[in-house]
Length: 476
Image 1 (cartoon, rainbow, N blue to C red):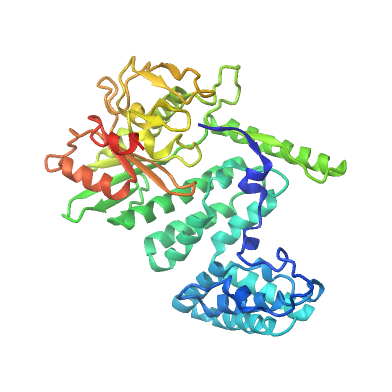
Image 2 (image 1 turned 135 degrees about the vertical axis):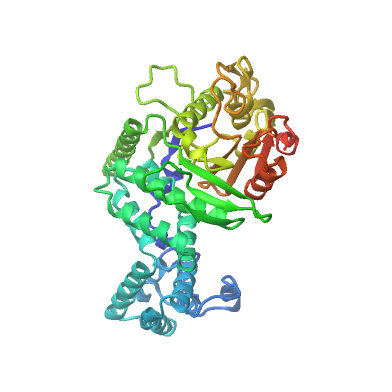
C-alpha cells in the first residue's frame, strides 16, 4: 500500500536535474580511444522522430560529432539539453512567441557550430545562457519547478512538490498557450510557486499543489467535454461546468486530498528527508564509495503514531478517504445541478489503482483475494469484512470490519453527490477511477446514461453499487 522504506536510489527527488536526463549525454558516454569517427551503426542508434525540430536535429548532429572527439576536447553542457524540450520551445516560439525567434536562431547557430568543431568557452557559455533565458521565457512555471527541485537537492524533499508530475506540468504549460482558461490557471500556478518562501515552507508547497491540481483536472475535463472554469468570488459553487454532447450540463467539484494531518505530517516528512541526506553525507565523508539511506513515505500515517499504525492496512485507507471526503465537500457546492465529486489523490496514493473499484479482486503477487478500497469506501455497509495485502505469502489477509457505511450508501449522513471520481496522475500511467450510484438522479432530466457518459469518458476504471463492471478489473 505504502512504501515503508524507500532506498535513496528510488527517490525521484534524489535525481534532481531533469534537464540532464537526455537520451544522449556527452558526459555519460565515454568514447573508446580507437573510435574517433561516427560509424553508420552509431548514428542509427539515435533516430530522430518525424516532425523533430531543427533545434533537436542540430543537437543530435552536435552530440554525434562530439562523441568522435577525445573527452578532453568535447564541448561541455550539451548533455544538459533534451530533444523534447528543444522541440517544445520551438513549437511555442513559432506559434505563439515570434519575438523570441532571434534566441531560437542563436541556439541553432551555436548547435550547428558544435556539430563541426569544439565550441570556445565563450560560445559554450553563450549557448548555456541563451537556452536558460529562452526556457525561462517560454516555460516560466517549469523553470520555477526545477528551481525548487534544485534547491532541495541533497538537502531535503517536499511531498507536495514531489507529487507533481513533471511530464504533466510540461504538457500543461505548453497547452496553456492555446487555451485561455488553462492559461489563467497556469498563471495562478506560477504565482503560487513565487509565494513559496523557502525550502522548509511546506504550507507554500501544499497550496501550490492545489493550483497544479486545478489546472490538471481542467485539462483532463476539457479533452472530453466543453469545459469552463467557475470563478466563485463569494458564493460556494463548484469548480467547473461541462456540457455533454447532448447539451446537458453537469458540474465538477474538485478537492486535492492531502496527507493525514498534513500541516504536521508535511514538516515531519521534510525532516525525515533531511536526516536521510545527512546520513548519506556522513557516509561519503567517511570514505564510502557507495552511500545508501532509507526514509519512510507514509501518507496515511498520523504524525504522532502510538504504534498501532499498519502500513498495509486497507481499512485505514478506506476510513481516511471517507473522512477526508466528508470534511472536504459541502452541500452548497452541489446545488447548481448534477455535480461530480472529483478527488485528486496524488499525495495519498491509492493502493492497487484501477483494481480498487471492485469490491474485491485477486492479487496475483500474493495469490489472495483483496478488498478494493474505493468500492468499499463508497458502497460497503457496516460490518463488511475488509481484506488487505498479506505481510507475506500465506499470511492472514483479514484487516477488520467496516464501522461506518460507505459514502454513497449512508442514508443517515447522505453524501452530496451520487458520483465520485478518484484520480492519480503521479505514476507511470494516469488512473481515474469512477464510482457511482446507478439510481442517482439529481435533476428530473438527468439519467443513469448521462452519468455513464461522464464516467466512461473520463475514467480508466469504473463501477457502481451493483458491481456491474467489477469483473473487468477484479480478475486481471
